[in-house]
Length: 346
Ligand code: AMP
Ligand code: MG
Image (cartoon, rainbow, N blue to C red; front, side, top):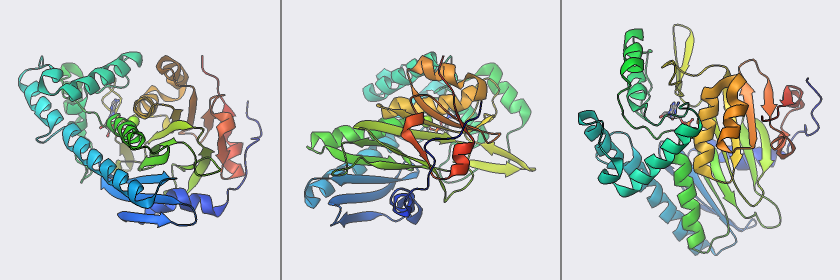
């Protein structure tokens, strides 16, 4: 049943500027909004623009902490890159020679991260699959700098499905964990009000003075557009996975970076999934997993992951929200609201 949307109204222009305009500018640096009493620090890491916004502490303290967050992101990026000389790159080289290599023996922290990823894989019946690194490589989505020009030969995909060589890829999870660690770092420095925003995926703590943090969610087929906004309540992460983040076209078909481990091909049926959850790592993995689950199964997989607040945009244009998400979302345009319906979790 479609019904009129109760929360459909146009947001003040200032909101979309605050949330998305910054990401669009693509500049690195530091800034202070004297009137707002918020300090912002921006840098590139993990292939994306990261914004650290801190409220309520002196600018020098905020700046020092934000630069520590920048170092943390760079360190984690190096450690968790699937190739190269970081911990995960070394593990993958060892796995290629011996699939029984113990990740914890290579690096204790990486071992914990992979154990957590494997737990999420189990909860999703393997739809979230941190062991599909070789498939990501085969598709050419492993490099942050370049996109593939064509899909791999079908025989190569079939060979991967048969052999499933173990190579670890944490691309669907690591950004969330990095955001969680960044928030922990800020808290350890006495900061209680902040947002760590990595390319539109973020976790917010506290408030922006006398009002909550406001977050914009990008419209899937409109790079400059805002689909909806929400206000975070206390300590919450908002993560979106979409087929528009990394993709290429070949022979008139669109191929994107979220792969279905059951078929070896990009997922179909959903354009984007937005998850609201306390823990950024779990939200990140869940958004990826629900893209794989698709338009029929996503509510069951969300329930299995303990995720209550979800919004999905379907390939047919329909928007679905769980009962927990519905009261949190403000659509920026009444037309979006008209496409939305509530879908309960099992
Ligand atoms: P995200 O943008 O968080 O949805 O993560 C997408 C990234 O996760 C891809 O670029 C791959 O590195 C990785 N990935 C792709 N498909 C899957 C999957 N089914 N399970 C886990 N990770 C995946
Ligand atoms: Mg993810």
